Length: 456
Ligand SMILES: Cc1ncc(COP(=O)(O)O)c(C=O)c1O
Image (cartoon, rainbow, N blue to C red):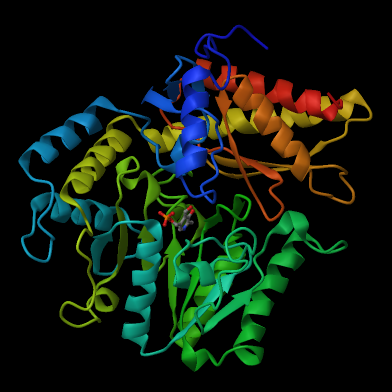
């Protein structure tokens, strides 16, 4: 490991106070809430997290993708404090506020598509997806929704039903919402042997077209929902040719395209929305996560005619579009713009690609490595590294990823995984991370991977 400039582990991981709190957590909190990092946080700034025992970690996870502008950015904190001191709630449908309108105006201006748009806000990402489906159903007068293999859209009944991965998200939680039809996603790394990437992308487009004959009548389809870069599914960017086919079929049959940009949006992929660089012009876009530094806020931005389809008071919720969260979101946009964080995402992505490429070579050079870099993929700073036990069979290195993550956490780097088999390390780093911090974290990660590859 190179010299540790930011990481400080003085108390052991977990330290004594964290241990005590973890025991309390085990006694008080439902077991389903597993904890990735066995410490309790005291404070966080930028890409650094300090725990209650004084340990300092570099954060490559950003509260699961909510921290594009970094922890406790002073401009955002100030906006939150000022807004909270003014008022904390009215219910927007009782008394409106300007921060909500400003946010709508700014996001509408950023959304792709040369058509009139409107926006509205909710709390969780799942709620945004639920409401996008409601808009689509009301506008089209149709019920069916097409969702992709590998999709993650949330944990409420409808969004859990739209979600693909069975365990831990769905097993035992049925019955699921009806009128959802699943089609393959062009996850090209795991395409059938012998097929080229282009053939597989076409195969997936054809499968969607065929599903409109074999699974659901196109005249019943309200929308297809896609993550332009699948998040939980493994950081899989959807191929532009596939998205072109999606849009062609949607246009032909009169159904809508919903882009779930909850994880990919807000600059992480090197453009404000990932859709922009994939040739996707969605009818509706769902946003969440980094919109408001983890304050509960999500939204739908989309075609005016679609957004105006539900009747009076047909869409809403007591807390939706909270004023403090809207103030935070406007400040987040200020920071993304003034600190050029979309450009920064590309610079960070270049570092990931370079380092992970070199790591792949290092593992192959070792001879007899137990794990290999199967693929490095993604857009901008939204980069995933899929690890396999064998480059030919692509057997997922799931247990090894867990060992790598544990080593990283014990050495001061917070990192999470994704993928069908939990075999992909995903980078959700705050985009304000310094290049020194990034290098330091990647040194730790590389060392952990090399150790696991050598059976240590
Ligand atoms: C792409 C995507 N959609 C929807 C959601 C659900 O968001 P939330 O957990 O805020 O309900 C997530 C959360 O991880 C997500 O990544």
